[in-house]
Image (cartoon, rainbow, N blue to C red; front, top):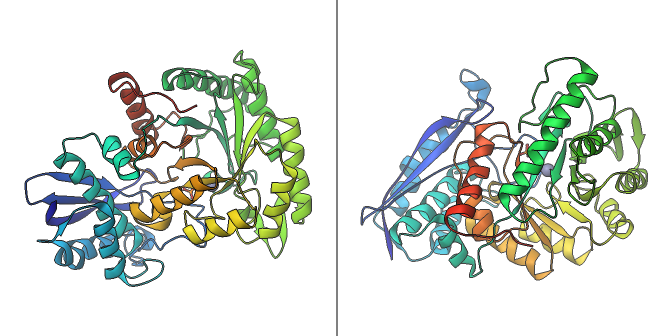
Length: 418
Ligand code: PGA
Ligand code: ZN
């Protein structure tokens, strides 16, 4: 039993220097939980609404004071003094209070902040680490997720110098988080040296800390990633594999994919992706097609090897009804799980359960705008995600999550999921 004493919030800044919020939940017995909310740049159209102030005088309209005020006033008024036994009860009350389908009234950022802060407060009340509490909510054994680490970025996460948004690396055979991070750090350094030699400048980093050299094409970005694996002394595909977030909705308009200098229709885009998977050691393709191009997704599903992850981010938006459609129409086989796309832990859990029932793989993901909060590492562990996608290894808002995984591995004896 958890009686809420108060929920409060303050506006803070994320890793892009844009406002977000930090929510605090105090329970009547003195237990307390806090959580801060991330924010995306290449957002899906079906995401729950992140409430921004729209006041051009502050942070170009991106202030979060309205969402903060919703927590401090209306949400606090509705939940203070009430008892919620389980997460589901609180989340259901928040959804009802908001009353819209996409959380547009109170804001998904306000609602998620409270949902997460309550979860942390309950974990504190039970004197459990957050991951253990989260694993009990799902009723599953906790496992550490395998990191998918950002190497190169283009698209909306860099200057748009190439169309494809992110190329990541995975150490598929590593037996620990520590080893996976060692291997990926070697490849990251090799990639930095290679691109520095080639482009002769100090490299700019993108929103998630990936390298963003002025590649001449998306193909060149993939080719350089494959080269970096070999330069670092690893076997491509065996020791280190690639994953790619095409984020195709960002360069799709009126049925045409504007991939760098080419204009492709859906079938040609599928041909292109298939050719990448033949040329490079790619094990996962995220958002290969536009979020509304269901026919293109179905074609890709037929064309790729079933062991490949056909991973839906903007397509699915962690939204149970979109996931159901993708399962029944064979449009994807893996879920990118971003809790703030849907707005409460309970709805994200429903998404996870649906995906697991269909034997999908789960990639738990951060946003390109993050904070130093590490709750995502506990969520990915407690919910036993297959992978975690947090970005690069060069910025503290990313490392907060990797370092938490390292801690859980070494102090709590948790193991990687295989
Ligand atoms: P976002 O990007 O957080 O900017 O939406 C992450 C992703 O596309 O996976
Ligand atoms: Zn994505």
